[in-house]
Length: 358
Image (cartoon, rainbow, N blue to C red; front, side):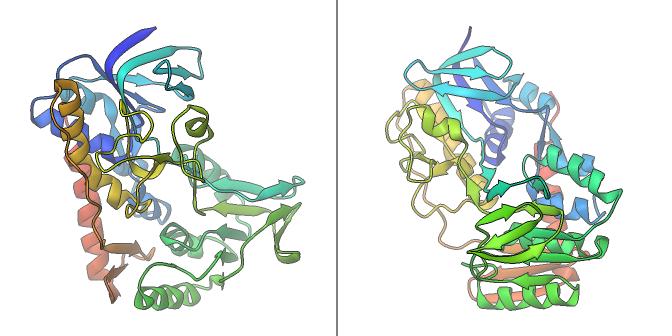
């Protein structure tokens, strides 16, 4: 079993930021590795543009090997099957085992799915991205009506990216569309969706899939053969099974230093972690990266750790599928091609910052 001083598990936004900083500055001492499910990291912010035909797959990916080499970090490609916090060991799906003195988790979350009865409906989740894109390419060969489950930013962007490629599209929201965002952004999004022919059903939680029918409560609300899942985050099962203290939904409870409440030698960031004030959004994961980099360095050197403070407000930029974007900041909202160009500039900038050679 290979042993490391530090094992970074997952190639999420925060870990990418940590590696970029270590590539430019001195990295901590010891043997360090990144464990990733694939050789590339997908940037989720560009997925709607990819589906709308504005980007290629290569535009949306970051090769991990050059970034890891530049940061002097070993890259291990494998799928986590189990984590034992008592033994500080990770078991991979191919049977390999890894152990480390310190662990950092940035593994994201899976997409929540209703209970399915029967096989009349094909269900495709937006994560993992590689699996989603492969499934979507198969669907493109034979366009049919599609329903999207999820009324957050991901569901809205997905619907606007695909509206012109499908004969019929319906979007189902558990509560109001874009709950938690400004009223202005919500109204603008509703206008765009209706203009593009997307049927929006708010306050319509889907309780189950019954053969080729979506059921809300006890009532059938949509019939078809294809469902896209862009609904809320669901914790990966092995997190709660690891022995880590988790919240009621199975996400790792962490302190302000980004350490596990129950096992301080384990850090957790991004969607897999639970910290009051930090939303499950890539924006928050990116902002956790500088603090995580400092604290991992401090942990390996025996120094004091720093607190992370979540920002109270975050800018929202939602792609509208036609090159434009909707903007929301505090109670203000706007939309148009200018904001689409700004979003494109920010997204491409993120990719370029992490495309390092080494």
